[in-house]
Picture 1 (cartoon, rainbow, N blue to C red):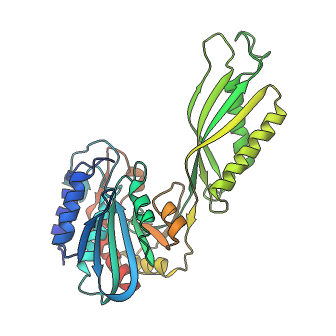
Picture 2: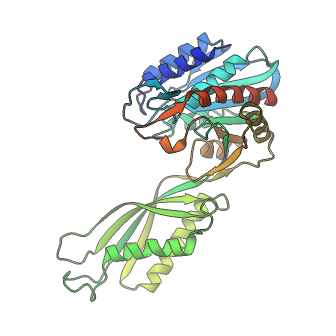
Picture 3: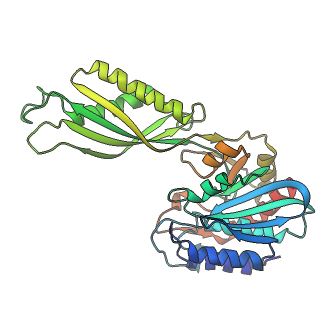
Length: 364
């Protein structure tokens, strides 16, 4: 059993190792060595650099504990102060990674059956190569917990899907910019099309269960005294569980065709790029959800928050292919993710270890 003092030191050491995406080698070496020290039955590296540790008993259920070892760029001084530990990745998501690793080790001599598969993946903050390698290798389980900040008494049970689109707007009626009422401005019509999408597809009363559309980049025009004849806008489109990402793309294309019919001198084209990611939502009556809710109540004695997130995480592609019931759990306030004030409260970190321990014993 790892002591509280040792657990805090392991987290501090993890945070000391700077590991932005594509630069995970040093933290990977540390985790590989630590898993051996903690008594995992087997420890290995896969093709892309994911570290995989197993605690295997007799036949029984399999539980995947999956977190990411990479962070966004930007160093933060690691320090322990006022019951908090600061550092890049303290929230997103090295404290979650450490709590799962430590919990698995702490109960390795208690469980009599089943298998715990702990995985520290690479490049979650970049191209998703780590989770994609697990999917490619069909690393399945009966249940999966993904390490992401949810707060000690929170559990993420849903994540929206995602589409990336480039809207290309062309105007066939342009001229001098001193007469904007005479011509059709491609930039104006790009804004109008985005507004049309929002009016027709968004439900502003329930954003989790609605398509949402966010412009993230815009380019257009040629010079300061000519009405722009072209404009391109990148859109981040988030997709609810009620519709697949591919069907959402068809809706966007349909909206573009109808917009073109209403505006004879304007042509809107939509190009989709990147992966189309479906939303994910677990049934809260699943044994996995019941187990972690019970564990949270026993450890912290506070009401449990079942959280539905507007973003995506590694659960989305993993469940889409392997259909493993999954949740996300971990200490920390997600509002601090990717900020220069990243910290996790030490009490929350230690409690999260106990919660995961109890959850494992209930499931295996």
